[in-house]
Image (tube, rainbow, N blue to C red; front, side, top):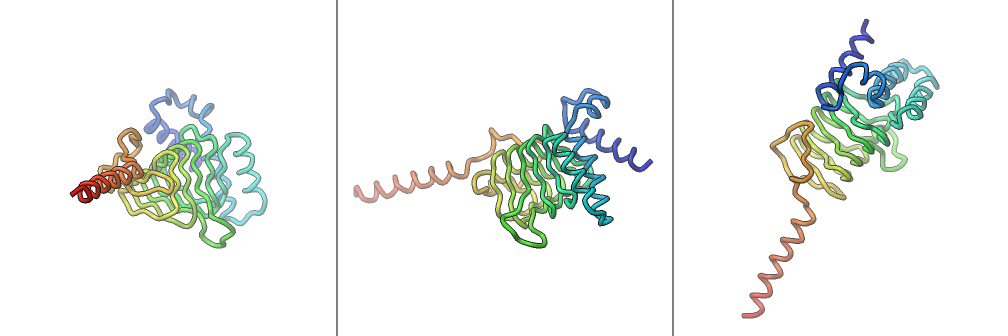
Length: 209
């Protein structure tokens, strides 16, 4: 009965977060993020029981089936949704909180051959935009957004919006989970260039006098 309750919860999460989800049958048959997550839940339970080989076999089968690679050691909270999903990679020591939303191409990876905790920790109610890369033993606080294509190598506190390569915090409030409006996110590089331009104009005026 517990497994059916879990499956129902995952289906309800997809319905709540994806306006394209038309029916329960469609989700069960056609949503690779749903397939990957259910298989991960099984693999993770076997991993916790220290059963050899089988958890990794399940994760690799899931990768072949869905294009989503989640190491069985990764810890994932409730109401997790992978939208589209192709190319998502989640490392062994990654920890993801509740109510998180991840788009295609996201990587939660390491930075080398460290041992111990070597992958990111993601708080609750976090959205990771398409192609976002988060590396190393860093933490992203609750209610945060990471913009598409950003590379995050430093921790960020709660309620942050991060963009860029490397990513920088451009907002620390006004969070709306699942509504990451890329056309309204400030460009930190453009802001710095504009600041330099203004400083140059001030220097020009000072020199002309």
